Length: 180
Image (cartoon, rainbow, N blue to C red; front, top):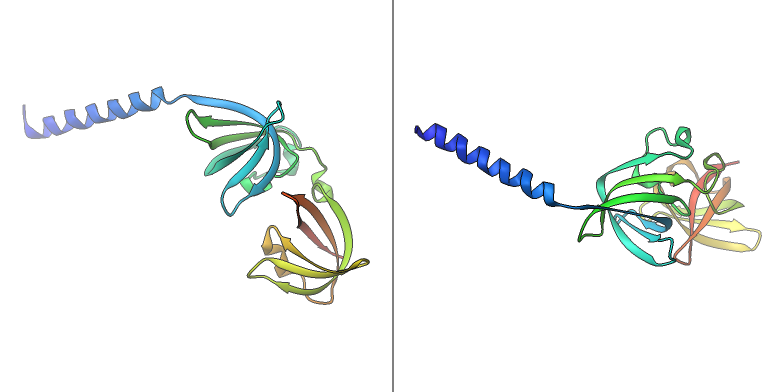
């Protein structure tokens, strides 16, 4: 047999082994409510139907689909995922790395900006690098983390805004900033 034929045979044998190994990788399915997200770490805390909460890693190239309120999420991405969404997800056995997510129940009205509490405020300071906004509320001045922090590019000091404030892991986070 010619050397090029041996190389081809070796390459085909290697490919067959790889396909065989992938075929044995078992994909598991789970479901639950999103409790919190941390997209800097690509992690989500999910509470299963038995009430147990676990932290899962989400692959950057994970497939995201919405069966509930699909028209509100025409180009779904991981940053669209947030509490209290009820999801079905897939992961490879032996890992906590999610590769596929289907949102079955959004749990809030996306047109209203998301879950949380709306608050009227005046921007007193902001830091786009850190992702914080300081605002004057009826109850005094308060600083919030903003997620996503890119929203801060739309506002300036002294502007009146409406904030959507969500609680994640006991911390109040601004998820939406709208100019008045």
